[in-house]
Length: 308
Image (cartoon, rainbow, N blue to C red; front, side):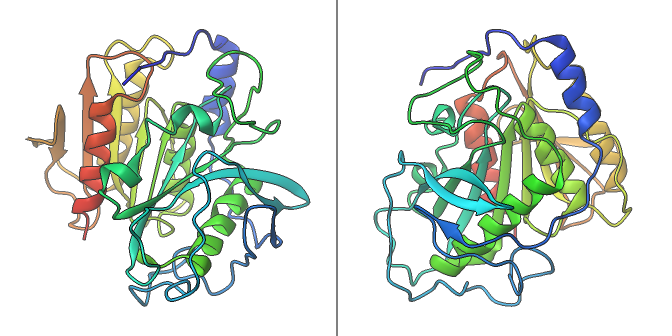
């Protein structure tokens, strides 16, 4: 698998990114989907606010739609068109509940660039649907962009992006057979910062969080926010340096009330002792630069799949 590295991200952009990840309140419901998406509404969602009450989403038993995983789907959020890619397993019958995994790209990237890196549909052997939302910015197109200055797309921790994630969660559960207790999110670089912020602002939206080469959140408005989280960082990262990942690790160890004793787990990871059973904290490192390594993706799926 080809590993890519962001060519350059200005220091002032990274500084602004870090500052931007103060927690923002969740947005309300957005409008109906258009283009490739179905209709959406957030009220009553079993996966976007509150613990799930069923292992079967409203989409179970509905006619199955399986879009091309490389064709952009769209929905309207506050009057703006938002984009996402969707990979539905070829063997699903839309009656057996599957996991749902969100994968977020980084700054100045598009979702096309992470199709083969956040490949959880194939990694799970068809036990998960993967959705790759596009951050704010121009239309992502169908050609990979990674640090080339074309899109300058962003994942800011703001109400607009929270509403997009919330609406997409509900829409997909309404159309596909998903287990609402198996909703997960990972994000790379700026998407990793956003993932950390979302874990603070809305820890109940997802069962597990996995920021990669990110940072933050710095603080949580609620002491009750104790997500299950795996933090991953490359020791050779010269774009978002490893001290950023270490800061996230230390924050979540303290936030979740864990101890300092660790045991080896997964590949290159340490699991912290003393965390609440539902809120483990795992820190993973590897000898790579600013990228999503195959080791990281494999660890993330194993982590998600092992959560009760």
